[in-house]
Image (cartoon, rainbow, N blue to C red; front, side):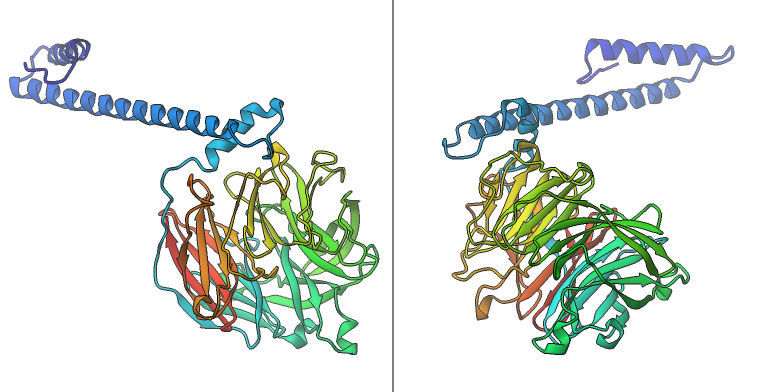
Length: 475
């Protein structure tokens, strides 16, 4: 028998198996054709596993070589660049492997964008929600026309609209999901005396206790809540569920930021049906914000509350104790640069993305394990548009991590552009990003609703053309 590429040990094992099967027949030997088929099958299985083992060894060698190169490049940084503590050497190597580790940027394949008319005035943002008892993701969009809208991103259909009269305010300035059945919001106001009375107030919008079927999703009337713990207006709120909604729908946690008092407070909520029955402040974060709080984010893995302000500072605090989790005295401020939003990488929770209102390097990636600040991040990139980026622009991580999608206004011919960076690409900050133009006017918000088994996700965008867009992406 010809062994081909098999080694001697593999040939001996195969022959031994063939002989054993020949003798295993009850008193009668197998036919020669059957012996040959058994041998061929075993030989092919052996070759298959041998090739898989060789391929795995090559991948491990390539990964080790790349890790060594990136670690050497990281150690040769100029003296002015932030270096991590020696005690964090192991986490530093992992962080280097996650950022700037590829020689080629991932290129998303986008399909046709579906636009739906949604707003009468400029939209604020859209975000994904997972309501209790549902498998599908719902998109919540809100704008300055005073509407709050529920959309099915898969069917591209509108589910429900809450009007300005139902909200009882001019519009929602900021919204988040506080519990699996409750939305929290901050009210905004026009420049009129009667409207300003309702500015900066907390609102809760609960889901009516109906059937869990998608077509029966319904939000109740807005519930206004007085917040005496803040000395003045509330500017921003953020839920503290983390990831997919779960747990007890009758209890929840959220964090709020103030305007004049600059406080960052953690709240405990008690919900009955679609109404909040109790809301108590359980902790105050020890921050050093010198102006109004403009961005909040909760990281559930490390139990951290991240807050950004108009003074360009990002504070990281322990959610339970309120203590600062950053190095004392560190330079954590961008002078006169407003922090517009903060987002955690869905696959690497220690990576933080912050968007800043400035002409260039608007996106900054920090590693919380290395105690990096927004002034000295691990990675900074953006577009030099010649104008300051709006603090209301909302970028987003792709659900698979690595890719950052950011809306930009680049002039009349470049409006409606979403720029895409791969933070794992070695020349991410140097090369021009990939761009996609789903709208004809400025895009204000990017979010993602779900991901199927094939890796396809739906990007949800809201734009100054008063439309909401749904785009399928596959990496």
